Image 1 (cartoon, rainbow, N blue to C red):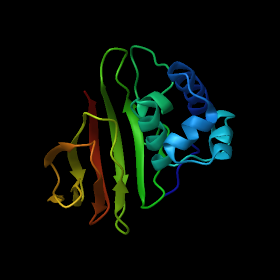
Image 2 (image 1 turned 90 degrees about the horizontal axis):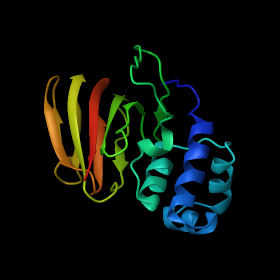
Image 3 (image 1 turned 45 degrees about the vertical axis):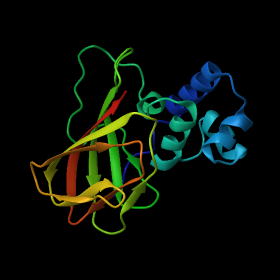
Length: 184
């Protein structure tokens, strides 16, 4: 799959903002997220090419949802046409996510469109404590869920599971799904 570059300026500003809010050094955030200090420095400078996994690790280390790192401020009425919007790619598998709507201040949910291709499964690390994933499969076939408890989904199926434990996504054929991340 080919996707545009991630929204680097938005990510850089969000990392600086959230690191300042937490009151930790660049080196400490890098340590907590399991990243090289130079990698984090590049991301805060608006360079580099962060993967989904890198951004999730940073979100967990900062105690914020993934969306706080990738979503720019938005207007009240917003349309994202099919084929538009920033898409981020996973390192381990042919999986793309596009944040459709971040939870507003005071709400704790984000909505994503996921595109998945068969091949290697995506092993996702635990998200921030209290995270719950809600997934509706729109097309294809998908095997997903907490590690060791994965289930196969067909179009129209809904699944919910704890997102604060390791989990997997494996496309059994070209698939797309809507994912709602709830953060308690």
